[in-house]
Every structure is written in structure tokens, then in C-alpha cells.
Image (cartoon, rainbow, N blue to C red; front, top):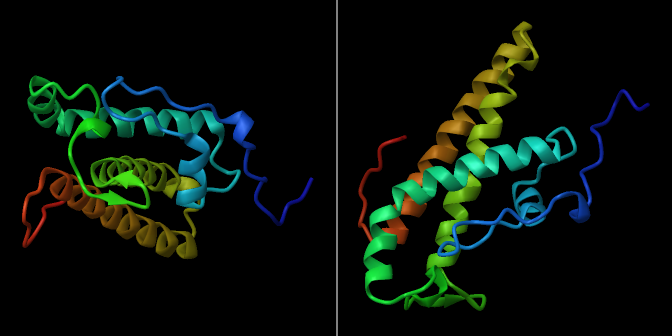
Length: 156
């Protein structure tokens, strides 16, 4: 057993895709892990749990938008007219960013309580600031998704 390093991240086979509601895109947990630079300390079960919460939160925020688009005959988010970025709909990119930020903020909060020493308190304070930054990024992604011009965005 290695006491100095983190456990290796799970393989892509360990992390199945999280099925979404059929309108919003599914979440590839292996891509989420890579994008968020999560190591093996975040187990596949923990990542899935946080991803489910993130999807539920973002889908709830965008519920009215989805209803309006669905009423116009758009069967999924990819059908909504939007500019393409790297071959993907900008709306899909913003949706994934919102979900990823929500997941990361959730994970940062959960790992705050590991070390309660003086150094641990300072590290925990940094984690709290990181969670706030991620929540801000989540709000910005949702605002951009909805086409809302923002000057300031309140934290969740």
C-alpha cells in the first residue's frame, strides 16, 4: 500500500454513462472525471452520486427553457439551434459546464472535513472559496445558456 500517493483514478469501464432525462444529454462520468481532474480519492460511486445531484439541480433550473423548446417540437437539447463549438452545440457545451461545476462544488464541500489541524483549516478555507467559485461558474453557465446578460451573478 502506498501511503504517499492518491489511489489511481478508476478506468472508463468503472464509470458508466449517467443516463439523463432524454432531452438533456447523458453525462459521461469518465469525461467528467478527466475534465475535473479528479483522482482516485473520489470513488466511482461518489462521483455518480454527485453527478446525479448536479443533473437534478441543473435540469430543475432549466426546466422552463426545456418546456418552451419542447413545445416548439425540439425533441432534445441538440435540436435547439445554436452555434457550434468544436462540433458541438453551444447549448450542450454550456449545459455540461453547468453540470460539471455543480458536481465539483459538491465534491469540494464533501472533502472539507478530512483535516482539522491548523494547516487543515487553511486548506479547508481554500476549498470553501473553490466551491464558491464553482457555484459562480455554474450560475454563469446557466445564464449564458439562457442568453441572460449578466453584470453580476449571485451565488447559489
